Length: 184
Image (cartoon, rainbow, N blue to C red):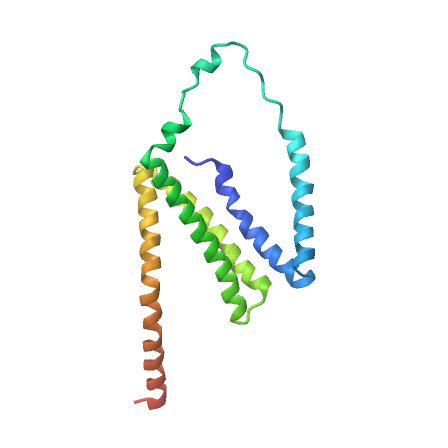
């Protein structure tokens, strides 16, 4: 099961994307960046000072021998490692790109930056929902199968987007024809 902190961390975009949009709308991007940096520093520096401790030194020379030895070169030769690294990198890039283009699209359609950022921030809520659902599904299937199904579903949705977009003009034209003809 995923750690509770990973479920909660998805709410960061739900909070900070709308906050960033509001700050940019009200104060410009430079001041917004300074405010966000100050918030980050004022929250993380004291928390790290209070919570993080110096690591304890090993008391016996055997403690190091008990750790599993997984050498870097073995991992780097593993095909599975590279497939996972590529998949996770592509997924993260796609989500980041989608979020950026979502805000750009919404603002180009006349919405304010604050509203566009708030809507993009809802992706964090969906992220948390997805983590909870996949965690629940792990009781019924393997993590590998669930991850593969999620990636396949996302790929299918992305593949179907152009087809879905082509259907809209046809429906709009049919609605316009029906409106011109009037009631029967």
